[in-house]
Amino acid sequence: MEEMREEAWKDILLGGLKSVPYRDRRLILMLVAAAVAVYFLTGIYAVQPEELGVVVRFGKVVADGVPSGIHYHLPAPFEKVYKPKTAEIKQVFVGAVDGRWPSGGLEMITGDTNVIMLQVIIQYAISRPVSYLFSTESPERLVAYIGEEALARVVGSMGVDDLLTTEKLKAQDMIKVRIQDVLNTYDAGVDVIGAYFQDISPPVEVAYAFRDVASAREDRNRIVNEAEGYRNTILPTTRGLAQGMLRDAEGYSKERVERATGEADRFLSLMEEYQKNKDLTASRIYVEKMEQILPYLKIYVMDKDDGKGVSNLRLMLPRK
Amino acid sequence: MERSAVVLIVVIAIGLLVLNSVFFQVAETEQIVITQFGKPVRVIRDAGLYAKIPDPVQSVRRFDKRLLIYDVKPSEFLTADKKNLILDMYMAWQIVDPTKFLASVRDRRMAEILLADVAASEVGAAVGQIPLSVMVSTVPEEVVVDSVMLNVTQNCRDRALENYGIDVKHVKMTQLRLPEQNLESVFQRMRAERQRMAKKYRSEGEEEALMIRADADKEKRSILAQAYRESEKIRGEGEAEAARIYSGAFSQDPRFYKLVRTLQAYEKFLNEKTTVVLSTDSELLKLLKEGQPSR
Image 1 (tube, chains in turn red, purple):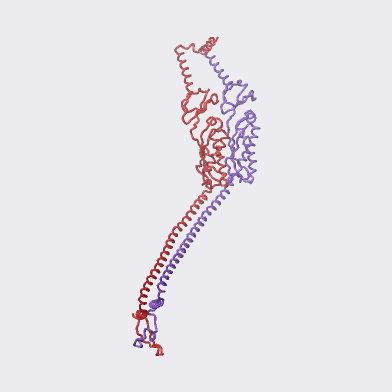
Image 2 (cartoon, rainbow over the protein chains, first blue to last red):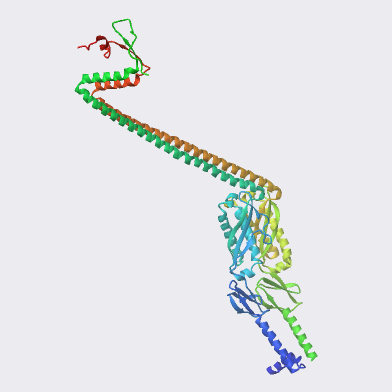
């Protein structure tokens, strides 16, 4: 029964070949065999080191996270392999159209209702290949939209000056955290690595005013520096002057003491002599001094008994 | 020979047709509704290989199972404080009830039109309730966008699930922009703010510089005054010391001191401009008259 059936199949399958000469028949069979072999060989695939393989059989995932190397799957239409690049860092330009930003970047409103232009890049990587491949329509678009939303909220909660200066890094972190939070609710199979401000600037319409603020800040520093320069020159000079005054006073003081000592010593020496013979020394000193002084003076000598006044007797003229 | 070959080909062709009509694949990204003469009879959500009664009795309708993203066209809304805002939104949605979806929506293009209407009406109503100041603010706690959009999402989800078999996961506001005509006034305000800041920086600089200069001048005066005080003190000490030395010496013989000092003073203040009138009685000239020193 079994054999008969087999024979019947053979007849049907080989029936067409019966009229072909034996030699050609062998050739055809070899060709068919070769075609079948080649067909099965198409199931060989290589996974690169940066990839992970995901195999689906009739559309259903049967192998997830196939590591790098040579592998085999049943040929189409039975099985198919996807090889997402899990080690690759992918990036999206937030708000860009075809990978390019409109001039200046994306326009947004800050928390203090200023308008600002932003160019932000979000980097992400595949964390779960199956989710990445099958759970969302386009992880890249999703990241771009979520990124734009996170950017708008974060920018909308901060002042323009903070964004332009000190809080840039904080803003990047906040955006990253927010994106990841939303991504987690979607099972998108990607992890965000970071959000990075490429450029953040005021719109051209107000750019001059912003630059002027920067230069005003410079001006402020310059003016203050100049004043400090003034202080730094005036104070040392003054301190020098003060030291000079002190030295001068010390000199004066010293001089007074030295002179006093000298004069005292002189007086004491003379006094010693004087005390040996008071009258004589006194007279001598007196006369000597008069002798010294009087030649320079105009002197009128007046006889007291005359009563008539001045005798107008000029004894000596001043020496010329 | 020809007959058996034809038979073979026909058998294979019919076999493939039947196979194709009976067996079908469902991919991980799809969900399937099988209709029998147009009426849905079976829903398949899991991927794999399935069989059904061949066409035209049963046929397969495929729907996306993935999370879909719809970029809602930017449109203008009025806030509670009568400010025009252009809002960009996106919706993340998923077909969760393909039978209902098939009956009421049919395809994605139609779904997006319907979702846009739902979102626009919900967002319009929500935004109309809140002023611009709570959509953007430097005080993060004040910003209500998240809770508002959560509410919008909830309402959209309820409506879409009920009517279209669609689960709206998120309605999110991305950009919010001011219309062209309002932008100019914002720019004017920004410029004015900047000018004020620039002015403030410059005058702050002036203020600080003046203070530094004044401080420096003050310090200069104080240093000089201290030095003066110190030097006067030193001088005084010197003078006191000198006086002490003088009096120490002179007090030993005040009469002699008076003599010496007086004579010293004469030498200083008597000069060629001085005229003295001397009496012949004077000590010095007595001899001039008397000829002989008195005994």
